[in-house]
Figure 1: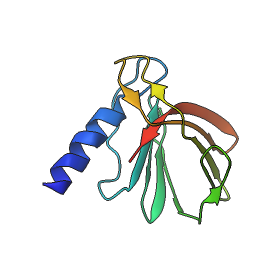
Figure 2: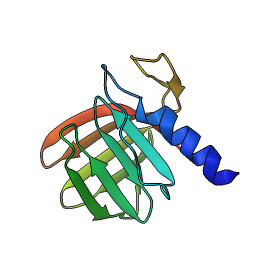
Figure 3: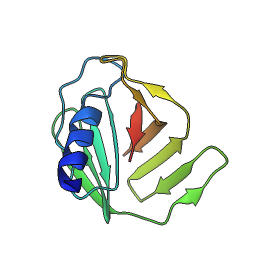
Figure 4: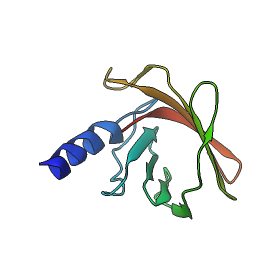
Length: 115
């Protein structure tokens, strides 16, 4: 039952975008998911990024830095800033608990996220 709920939440979040985007399948065991215009990020034991062009990058999940607005995760190739502020999916109008800013190899991605 919990797996079904996680998959339903993942399907919901996969469509979270700041513009029209195709859903991307996230890592099933992820504790946190974020998505934007054609990209997704799943955080479990690893941070797994899937880019708009289908490229995947996995990095071990570091300990989060607790910031004043949310958590910050930094790896050699990814920086994730989670801001605990309501995020509205521009495509579906769905609300999510967090806004996210992700930088992968110097390229910035904005989107929504949640558990």
